[in-house]
Length: 331
Image (cartoon, rainbow, N blue to C red; front, side):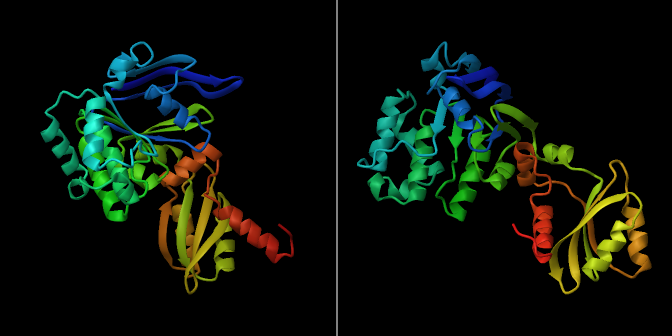
């Protein structure tokens, strides 16, 4: 288990992490997200014992990382974004070196064989690390994190440099390991986080702005009074018709999907369901609705909204720019 309590880190007058708290339970994969400069790397460096906090506590399997760092670190397997490899060693030499460095007591040969089988390194064990592809180097980094079978895995961008097949294999591995380990996964690949993580913590400007699963975040931040529609008909005529519906406050035209088929984003007054009126109005003019759904946010849109306040992901801004340029305006 990982527990962070009221963690703060100051660098002089700058506060990188501001009084954050969260937990990751055993058997849980937690995604840790944040834009550059949000405090994500600082938090992970505190959890792994690389730096100390200014205030607050971080517990690894119940052990305070500051009070007893050696014991706390014995529970951690860490894969940084740039794996700590010795390029002039073979894979076997390096893993044996890590085994001794961690003072691992598990049966050496069988333990390392099992790790190499898990991360698919058997074909390159006798090769020098410097001669491996970037994907295989990443696998070696993953292997060293598993030496000693640690209870906690902290993974920073674990699939960087891997091809699509390898990414799927590593994702499957993370989900499998998550059944018996506590895992924190930091990644900029949001679909990866959504595919692997049970829970997501989003940090922005040193503070936690969200802590829930992806579905709940999308549901809580989405607005049921906003609709996305695919409608066949002239875009200007349809836009005027939608705008004339009672309680509709805003309509803008998105991409063209087919000949005379456009995507429309519609916003009604909050708490008002305008779907029936929209259907009646369009049916009266024989404009077919090919698709209508509420604008539930994707994880990427949730992330943008939490960290930048961008609600539409830029679609409306693009339309305004096009309108302005079309009228002879300047950007």
